[in-house]
Length: 255
Length: 327
Ligand SMILES: Nc1ncnc2c1ncn2[C@@H]1O[C@H](COP(=O)(O)OP(=O)(O)O)[C@@H](O)[C@H]1O
Ligand SMILES: [Mg+2]
Image (cartoon, rainbow over all chains, first blue to last red; front, side, top):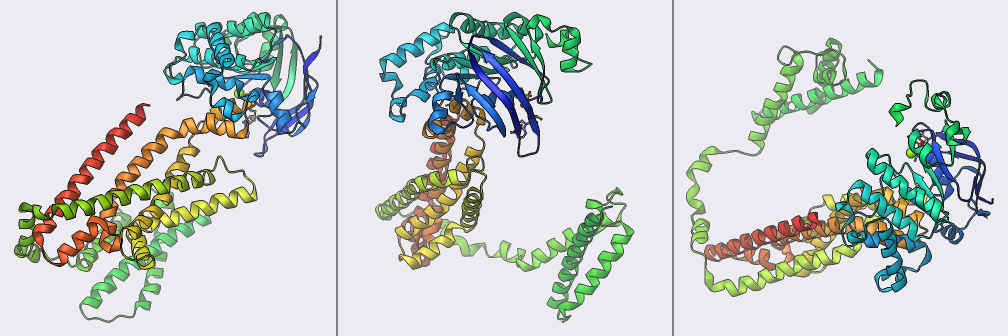
């Protein structure tokens, strides 16, 4: 199978001096559900944000579907970004506007400013947005303001927004870290379904081994900006887990 | 103790003693003793040095390691002395005269009677002037909005790129806004009444300048407080810079911007009357004229009208801002 992501010798040094990524080499195949494990501060968010250049890499190469991400100009970057959906721990929806408009923003990478101001009057967009909301079970909420929704609902809106992009890849940065266990599992189920049914590749950072085993097809672990484990979820046993999370970590604590 | 802390402690004590000795000099002077001011320098130096070695002084209390009980230390007494001295000098400088206050009330008879018997015959002239004032305030606010809007983006730390040019623009806009804001509208009114002549136009310009400066500050602080996560999320969809602004920045700032602006209009109506006093036109100017002619009944009606308008503005702007918060 083809690689959707290929990373060579990726480094990120923040201006503060923190060396967050120290030579990452990684290939991600189309259709994988890749779980990113690692202590906080190990570089998971930095790695995910380098993939769509929300953070500028310091050196190294990144290819998305064989397109050069690092050297893309602003127009090229736009075309790359619009094929990559992103889901965040804090949901990062526009809180003061309606659910529907938030879903529309997933289309921004494809349309002009004028078009984006009149989404509702474009039949295709409206139908697509409603269908995506339907898919995450929130169609009735479309006119509500985001800030009146629960955390789990907001994350599902964020998934609908990502779907609006018609993405080939979804980056999820600890998407369930601020949710309770039951809600967390339901959000992960949506991501799992997109991965299986729509063949969308998912790269998702997590702290919970149980969720990693349930949804992941492959796991990599970061420690101090380096990949210290790369394998299947079942290969991670207690010993490996302690290597990644330190001696004191108990699997039970990490759910 | 680090040397820099020692130095700071000494400096504070030195300034305190300069102040205390200077105050003493002020009283000596008012009793006819002429002591050259230069004498207090060496004295303050000596006192501060001695007390710093004793480690019991305000400076040492701030930066030193030893903690002492307030009234059981020299430090406490020195601070007490500073407070007493300040009140005494203040009393003398302000020429507080309780005798006058309690015996000369009759002088205010005219204005008090004016308040109780306002002259309704001139209400038409008053209303005309009042309309002038309200429009003056409105125009000053409305014209300030676009300027402050643009400037606020330049004065927002998180939006300006951290390059030499970006930093320069940020600091220049910030500094100018701070300076212009610290110059009172009444001073601007004096400047503009000379520049464009006495009248509402001068008042409008004065309020506008002041409004631009303070709205720029309020707006830009709002921008600095926006949630960068939302910007990140919109950027990640492939949105252009303009789309990021429309969908991630503006929704976050629009309602606080409106609230600030309405509040500003409220303030401007208030200030417009004051500004009128120094040549800014409107009801303030009318008030000044009537007061100088000693027409107390006319002054009475004007004061009532101003109070009424300020009260209404206050209430309306309060209600609107409340609604905006809920949005
Ligand atoms: N914007 C930033 N500026 C400076 N240092 C940062 C920034 N973001 C993250 N870091 C640092 O980079 C390292 C990796 O952080 P991050 O990628 O957020 O890790 P994780 O997502 O695994 O918790 C940490 O040491 C963190 O403090
Ligand atoms: Mg993180």
